Amino acid sequence: QKIGDRVSVDVGFGPTISNVSPFNNGHGIFADINGYYNTSGSQIGLHSIVGLRFYPMEDKWAMNGFYVSPTIGFQQFNYQYTDFYNPNGSSANGFRRETSFGFNFGTQNWLSKYFGLDMFMGMGIKGLDIKSFYNAYDPWGNAGAWQEVREKNARWFLTAGVKVSVGL
Image (tube, rainbow, N blue to C red; front, side, top):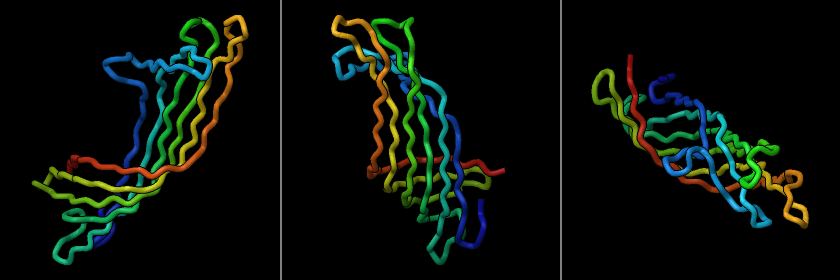
C-alpha cells in the first residue's frame, strides 16, 4: 500500500503447516536423547510480517523500482509429539516461535496496470523459542512421562524470494 511519494507498506499473514512433504505424510520421525523414536505431527500455526519500503531512486515513484525495507516478523509452528512405539499413548504439544527483525533489498516492477513482480533478498536476526518433548523411559524400556526441552536463542538469517502482486 502506497503511503507517500517514495514509501509503501508491505503486510503479509497466513497459516503455517509444518512437517508436510510427499515423503513423511505430516509426521517427522526423530530419535530422542534415549535413542527411542518419537513422531511430531503437524498442527496449524501462523505467520505475519510487516515492512516499510523506501524507494530511494529519484526518477522512480513508490511501488516501482529498487527499495530498501526494514521488516518485523512473527512465525509459530505447532507440533504434537507422540511415542513411535506407543502411538495410542499420551501426547504432548510443542511449538517453535520465531520473532525476527531484518532488512530486505529488492526491486518491484509493475509489468502492467494489474500485475507486479517483486524480487528480494535480505538478512536479519531472529529470536527462537522452541518447546519440544521426549518420552522418558524407565529402566525396563516402558514409556514414562513426557519431558519438556526448552531452547531459546538468537540466530542470523538470510532470506530471498519472489512475490506476485495483483492490482485491482
